[in-house]
Length: 202
Image 1 (tube, rainbow, N blue to C red):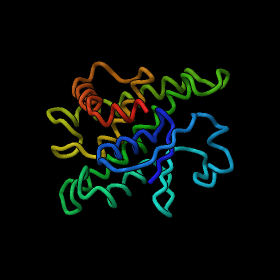
Image 2: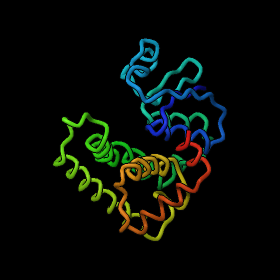
Image 3: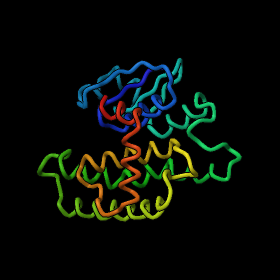
Image 4: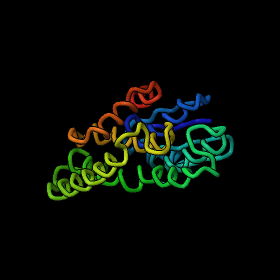
């Protein structure tokens, strides 16, 4: 299989999972450059010109969480997720998708209005709104993590990968709160994993 990846982007989640599962893969690192991502060849793989893209034999996929679910089901051999009949499986899916569909949205807005958008399109008001939204979600996470190491059950799962990448993106923006001890120790625990280190430095 082959993963198309941009350093620091959401494809980091997929790379992290591939490393945690110990799977063989080919990696193509693309520049974080609209010209590369909008080329005709790449648009055949990713119609929206984004990463990640995973090519597995004749299958081509985009969207990081969808790829994570696919890899878990086809190559995980029961690892990094609760069993389907587990009482934790529904909770796992909820947190798996929360990390992108909810938690990532204010982080993306923070990044946009800090440095991604042209200066004349940035809004201090929208930046502050995004920071408040992220702070709210971070507080909920902190309360959930009090007295536990991981977000679901007692073991590290792919939900921690999705959430962990989003916390990493927030940290890169200087938005990760210092006053939430359970969240802080959780992120430090994730960041100490060898697969995290490799994925975030590639």
